[in-house]
Amino acid sequence: MDKHSCRACGESAGALVLDLGELPACDYFPRQDDPGPDPVYPLQMWVCSSCGLAQLVADPTIPEEPRAKEPAALVAQAADAVERVATAGLLSAREVVAEYGSPHGGSWLSLLTARGLVPAGPGESADVIVDCFGMMHAADQHAALAERTARVRPGGTLLLQYHSLNTIIRRGQWNALRHGHYAYYSTTALSAMLARHGFGPRTAWQFDLYGGTVLLAAGRDGAADGSVHAILAEEARTAVRDAETIRGLQLDAEAHAKRLHDWLVRQRSTGSTVLGYGAASRAVALLRQARIDSTLLPAVVDASPAKQALRMPGTDIPIVGTAELAARRPDSVLLFVPDLLAEVRSAFPEIEAVGGRWVDVEDHGSAGLK
Image (cartoon, rainbow, N blue to C red):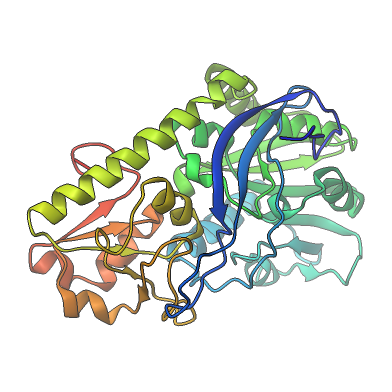
């Protein structure tokens, strides 16, 4: 790779920690009648030795419009988060709020206005700035954080929610790396980034979403409380700044891909029918790394009508509607988005009613790919 400069602090000292090779864009879903080949691009993670931010090296792709159906788990978590922040006394009626949302959904604005907060106008300063999985989509991390902190009024609060790098490392979530996601935050690195803008973490909440998500409240005044110190201590034990530790994701990728491929081969050899569920961006790298095609996985079911009649990038696996679950009566449904488990079990009880099962693609234990 060419010399890389950190997206947050500009320093060039760092290390390549994960290289998934050349992959199709994770949000480019061709039509089923498009024979390909699909264009491919390098997908690599680099960690800065100065500020500790893990980040995407380069992204020559052009983002596609989001098509996914918002998971119920994301909606529920947003409501839970707003309740916790309000209980902490950080939300008051008639305060002005501005939101930087994710292109994948998850807006909190209706929840906040229901509590009496007033939406800010374009570029207007606000008492509360909310960023829920939004800032990671900014190529220039320094500029993105500068914009957000500059809009916070004196005494105001910046709320940042992110999928924790600590979680990614501990759970081997190597396929969190994807085109269009430029930053992978530890609370340790984000604290250093905030300090460059005169901000610091004040309190934090943790959620089970995506295996481990952090909501950080930051401001210009005050000191970090015990919740922040506990997260920082846990990250120190994980060694979230250590390049060799993060390089373990490369081994996780190889082992996970082999496990999935071998499991699907075994299912085919026994005559079992397997479908996928959830045409998620994180599934793209996994299917490619595991060398999965339609002979091993005949289709991926997705609830979004916009994704049906398309195929998974880099493969010949078609994306089909939910009616196929009843029509094909699969023995196993490989769930590419584990957070959907409760939702899909409730929505499609016929899977388990006839002896089928939902298989968490990230569960490597006895209930998963074994």
